[in-house]
Length: 620
Image (cartoon, rainbow, N blue to C red; front, side, top):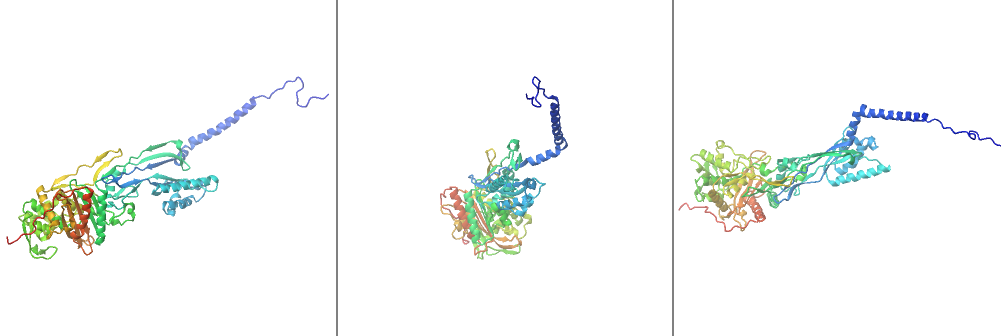
């Protein structure tokens, strides 16, 4: 018989298990040790190093970025955009994400700069310097890049991320982001640039209406704060946002088509006459609204940084110059309104007029003329104007004071009320300060200076029956809520009576239609009665302060029987063969006025113009 196998219990013997308490005790000790380790670590994280970890978490996870407000549009009176805003982005970076620790390469800033420079059009060394700053978490790499540029960067980031996943490259663009920063564009290029101005690289209005109206146009920026990891936004971490408030849209009184016609006409004439510059202003007689304000040469506000700095202003408002014979309208207004003469008054005009120890003369030598006051205006006689204005007072000093009051009432020596930055008030000395020459030259427009809008306003005042309306260029606004608000009504000021304005209009018509004595033939428009005045003045050279060259000008309104539009043209320092106002600005006036009348659907005049008598027979 075989004996039982070793270790097996004999038959009838019971199986006994080891006790469970030692094992439970061992498991309890193990769990206690693990819990102790976690507790120590938790205390370290939450108590000992809490501030450090909180700071690191905030720095590495959360970004606070600005939300740029959309700048309001500037449109013409029909809603056509003259200045608008398109999508663009500032390309920014977090330099702390370009370290070797984050990218796996020691020269990540330089590699990233090499990739970004051709896309952004920026200097590679500059970008590398901005990115190689691990203590910083914000760097502005390039402003107002197009959506296409950002898509290139995004595509490049995606390609690098895929290479990094496959282990064939490194992601060195993780820390590149975009911030919305819309870009200002001017669809018309140079069109109305002097009036509109431009927005600088900081997004602020820096010239023209962009500067004046910046508080309304700019709106109010917002902010957004969100978590990010590895250069990507964490959607589950939540965010806080202060929405941006868009800017107000501004509707101007400008008519884009009339503005274009004025700009084209003056640019061609400035070039043809080899002149320094020129300007054209078109004004609605009945409302004072500016329909066009053009100057040449101009600049493109889309690339103002490349323009000649001297061209970045608005010379039609900022240039002060002696107006010459167009301001004779003010002298004649004073004479008629004071009742010391009528358009038919006889004025004997010698070839030379001795006054204040010197001789005054007209623009050409002549024998004695026998002119009516209307003839003095038509022929644009300096001597005849002096003789007429001497009647304003019993003494020359009194006559000076009276003339000064009319010049002031018509807007000389004060800004127009348009509120444009840098607008010159011109120069009009107090009558007691007029020297012996000025008291005789100011009546015919020398020794006093104006800007082009001041000169325009004189003719609009006469066309409006003697009531001066403060010029305006803003028609209304459209707020962020879409509500239209009309601009305040302009101020009105009675300067001369309606009867005086009517007689002055007849005299101005004579300037245009009189075949023998009128100097404004070039301004005639078939079908419309035109009232206008030529001007040719000696020009003060702004560099030397001495007379050098001429200012050619023409101002007028139409239809003379039912005035609707005033057009003023001035050309500075023409150096071609011609320099008279009628020769150079008369055709510009005719072209622009013809276009404006058609654009505004102004019907032709109902009757033919009638010239006043311009001469008299001394024997009768």
